[in-house]
Every structure is written in structure tokens, then in C-alpha cells.
Length: 122
Image (cartoon, rainbow, N blue to C red; front, top):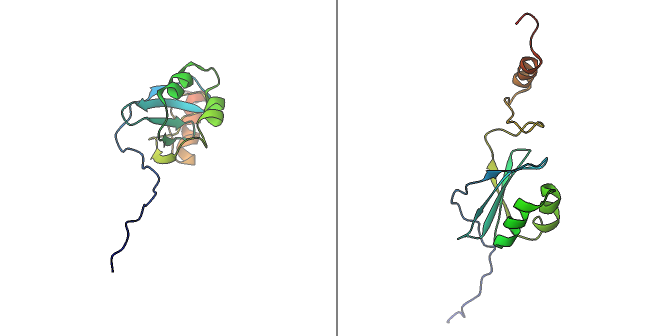
């Protein structure tokens, strides 16, 4: 008995190539990069999470770089519109002031906070 060929649909898996991201002035999105050959947008969020979006036209990346409210643009024009894949976390999540957080543990965070305030007698 001969089986007829079957069409198997699968979601396109995002490329594993490294995408060079550039820093953004945003409260939500720390950096963004675009792989033109693969049509993939990579975003690093303030939480430290990094996501890659597949089949994104170059114009979406260009608009992201131009708009003032980058977080709002990502929510309205990217999330839910393209295949999304988590590609991990950045080395350390960004601090609210835009710098990279220095601590992974509560104790280290408290020490860093005291250092920023300036310890008495130092």
C-alpha cells in the first residue's frame, strides 16, 4: 500500500545567528537589532528578556528606531503580529535609570544601592 505525501505545516523557527543590537532611549526596550537577510527583529527588554520576531519587514525596524514611544510601538505593531521566540536573557537586566543592574541577588542589590548612596565615612 502506497501512502500519499502529506503536507506538514510548521512554524518557521527563528534563525540562531547573532544579531547586533543598538541601544534605544526607551523605558521598556533596551536595545534592538535587525537581521535583514533573515528578516528577524531582535528586542531586549528592560526585564533582561530577549525576543526574536520572524518575518518582520525592514520598515517595521526603521519605524521602531524613529518613533518616540518604542514600548507602545512594540505592543501595537510587533507583539502578536509576528512569530515570537524567546532567545534568553541578557547578562543582567537593566536598572530603572538605564544602566545595567549590578546584582543578581538581593544582598548584592542592597550593597550596590548603599554604594550609590555613598557610605558614611568613605
